[in-house]
Length: 181
Length: 187
Image (cartoon, rainbow over all chains, first blue to last red):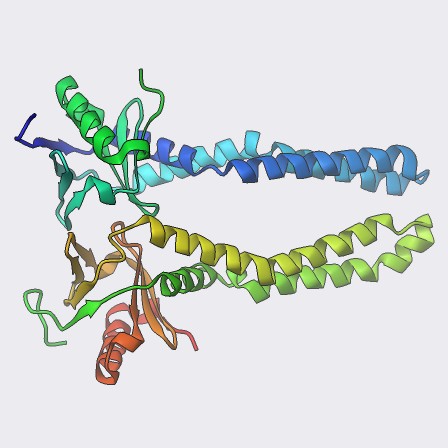
């Protein structure tokens, strides 16, 4: 058992912000919305095809049905094409908008302490909503709308193991690991 | 204003936020972000489109002896109207309630002190200092004050019922002076 807390003091870099924004945006992606778009798109395409082939003999009406097919394709493929581009733009905007400040965090067995210029908190792990370990970061969700992150580069291997142990013990299923060996 | 940054202009103590109040505030914040977000604006647009589609139905029928596409269009826009007017507000309020449930720190009773250049929220577990320049906008409704913006507490609400009339008036005038055009009264 370690009694001394893990102290992390680091300066946020643009790369950290980029990693966080990418992870955050990926997490916020709504799978239901994505599949709804695909299904609606497919339904419109099928309706357009049926209409164009079986329901009309007029050129103008056939053009309307063909336009419907394009609308269906645009809806169905939105998440796989335009959405990716929009997300990249959003990430870049977030990174450019944020300040790179120094942050100090303390982790002990049952709680974490955050000391920032405008924010001080002592939060028991049990009060956290979710913690996710990714390849480069620990994403700490205090609530769905209040998220902090800790770049793993600021921690040694032993410190990471200790923190993982704390989270596993206190958070149980609310501690998730993604893309980590 | 006769305050400096060491003495607060006003301090409100023993405030608390309930789940339903937070859900309402979240809905108000989302729907007032832009006129297009207002349910009746969206529903109005969809209803107008449904009427517009209905107006081309006779022409379509004459040209193609069929009314499938306009009818599909009318039904689609009517369904969208119902969705924007009645279903989406409930969904947004539900999201607000979910956020409230997820963050155990919001539930804690808190004190808020208003200074000239910032305000400070403190509860049993945290102290947040948020500068007025970080605030996107503030709203005053018949039953609450909502301050939006900032990284740590993007939605702060103060229920009017928890304040005396005098406190309500001084907070309202303080927000008006401090945030000027960012402060909006919603009746």
